[in-house]
Length: 198
Image 1 (cartoon, one colour):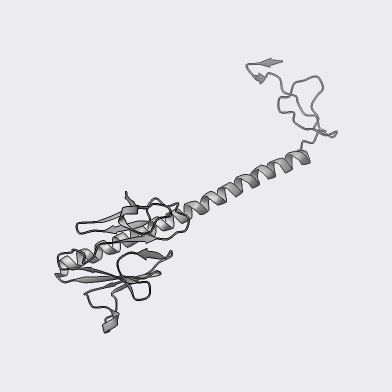
Image 2 (cartoon, rainbow, N blue to C red; image 1 turned 135 degrees about the vertical axis):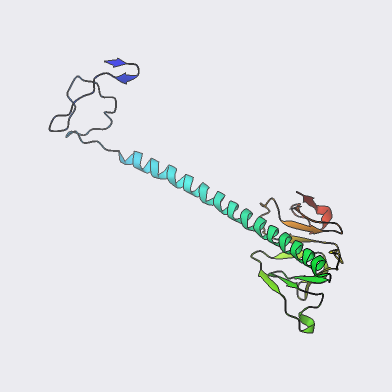
């Protein structure tokens, strides 16, 4: 007998574990001859197949998320270090230099660099290579000079190359008045005209 969507009387198990005949049992499920429950091989394979598909989708999404996070973190780190160098130039009332290489960033306490024997005060390794359209090249480094007023000597753009283009932020634009972060248009070179400021 059923009432309100739930069985009124559930079957009672005997010592053998079987349900009494003639009584309702809403979770009767799959019982074999001895009254033991279980799942068929088809059901187990189906559940494993569904779990495998979900795991594959989750792995792909996690990889995209990890690349996006690391690219954005590196972009924010570049922006932060450039801001610190700019503020340091104003505070010390002397120029500072930042040199960018594809795999690292170097900050100097003056406009002198390692070519005259001055060691950088900070060196940061970069997980993803960067490109820049400023003064210099990939071998000797791109120079970013900030004068004693914190103004950059040259305007340029710095782009993080993550190869997937999934990050929301992957570029830093250096202009006279500010440092801005943005997203480079897919397939374009690293120039301010191809970067959307965010």
